[in-house]
Image 1: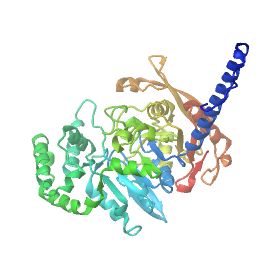
Image 2: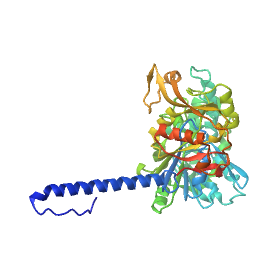
Image 3: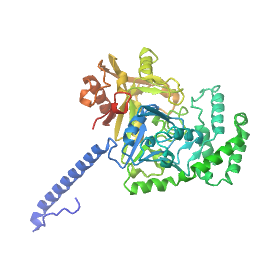
Image 4: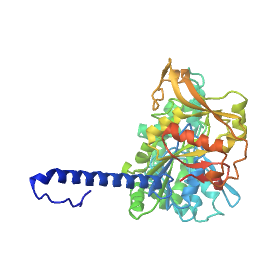
Length: 477
């Protein structure tokens, strides 16, 4: 209400009138401000108008984030990754041809977009080069649109060998193996935390690079001798000297790069790898990934402050899946679980492993929402539920007979494995929804299911996926 003009008091007798008018002006201005904030928030929740939008997984990964990211990438000037490595993946289809990305941002499909691999990412360069190679017919100049943070960690073949060795050793432990992709992600982050890892800035000094690599090999040999025997160290050094020549022009100060783009008014799309329940701090430890998968990771893994983030969208599958070991409260070890797996083709993009399937777990969704501050939710693979006569939603957990707070996820695996899930049962639908082009065309029961998710989460749904193609993502706002 700055700048509002209040009536001037003519006498002490009129002071109560002045106060009443002032209070009215303040109340009116506050209401107008609240309305503006509401309208702004409503316009931003789809991610289509925000200057910096973040898309994150809201469960245990494999939610189908790539489809929404692909849609939003068409109008973005910059697309960026901030965490993880080649342990996640999605397949994009352009003009009938499939492109499998594990490291490249989705914006590589948009020929006018710049793409950034942030400092929080660990990069296996041979994998990166193969992904760029598959784009040569689509865009011969694709590499020129890719920019890699000089602070990003380099993942070596030795890290991958160590990952496999550690998984083998853990299989004999009390908790068993983690179920990693064996792509070397954890060991590479360990090198980072040990402060003896290699960064892309090291590629810019080819005289010092071989010695730095040999120093890392020496450390790894002391601790993981068996794994190091699998790798030809000199050959890997020679390869990275060649990578240095090819990639040197694309290595940048990513913080300055992203901030300069924001200052120019560019729209920036940030895509997360993995998901909230796989976060190294807040996930179901130790059955987690090795990076920060939440919105906090955007700030540390890309170098943007929280206030720059305009919209955060959580991607939530219409049911729940997870890969590997660990508690799964709503898991279905029956015909329904197998049906979801078969119809939803729930097999890992990176590993091909079958995913465990279960009902939608809203305790997981609310926990992830509390971590990330979602402006909206993108529901994916709603069509997989078609044909079920009844659909259950897990709405909360009970432990030892007491209902847990809605934002609580037990840190203890034993406690998480012991929770009881309270369910509500929703009617299913038989109609094929893959051809629906707007929300009003969905069966009533499907709309009720979406509304139930909104009501339980307290967060609006902005997008709904009803089929495998990009065109099968329906906007809700």
